[in-house]
Image 1: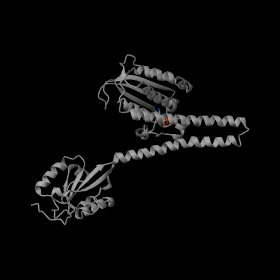
Image 2: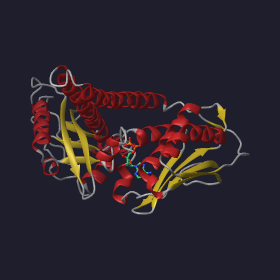
Image 3: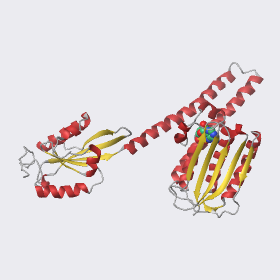
Image 4: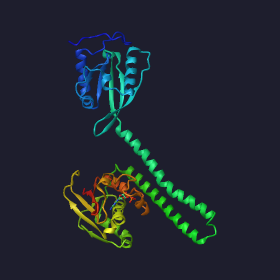
Length: 374
Ligand code: ADP
């Protein structure tokens, strides 16, 4: 029998547990909620735990002491504040919120725990405890902080160089035309580096803000590749490497943003020359892909392959992150900003396409872009 006890409650002499009929109704409601919810009685025992709460905290919760499962000091404090409010209606009425971290061997999830004292109308004294997953919010906040720190770091070194040389040109090198020329060309290079960084940052923010709107205008991918290769011809020739392009001239037009796709292939081909050019040649192959995992229909595939040093597999999962570089010195020396692949990833995702990277040390790298046909 489900005994009814009186809690010393500020809500009159309300029972500290739900009556059987009330309990069944509450269970039906709680079970329908997608996020973990606990109902705790005035005796601090868990009366009800919905399936999401059982998945989070483990089985056998009902009937046990709530504080045994919610032991972090911050969560204990909000539960105590909730119980306090139950027994004393003049106590602060909340909101009672705490941050709770749930760790497993492979992951860590951060929840905002909200404790809500039930209103007297439900007929018993108890607390409802909600768990709201805020991991993605905290992660976004951390990414924003990292981004600001990275941008500041990238800007600081060219600015330091410029400030240093201005001082030198005003003082010791004032009357030395050879040194002046030398310093001015270094200053020019650093100024160009900042210009590239600012222009990549603007591209990134533009692509991110347009990412939800899928481009519709039909374009010829073959023409995009021809134009990109023509623009990169001087760089390819300077590097003394061969570029082989296997075209698919009769491919039907696909929906796309021409400038953005030029930017994608410009970045990928330029990278293959910059980082893989010592292999002596690069290959660009355009083909049709009837089925691509993760995509619903046929796609056009463009792979950009080099035969250079390749990339250690440990770097591959992070390569498209902003400012991620395998070798920061080498990238900066080549005028890289560390944003190229991040921009590519966003543009391809705006086109509902896919980017895959295959590489092995000493065997070169292949960057493949899949773009949906319709
Ligand atoms: P960056 O401005 O540094 O070139 P990207 O985002 O274009 O920035 O590339 C990120 C990093 O990925 C580069 O710094 C480089 O270390 C690595 N990378 C990109 N493409 C290649 C490639 N074809 N071969 C070897 N490493 C590459």
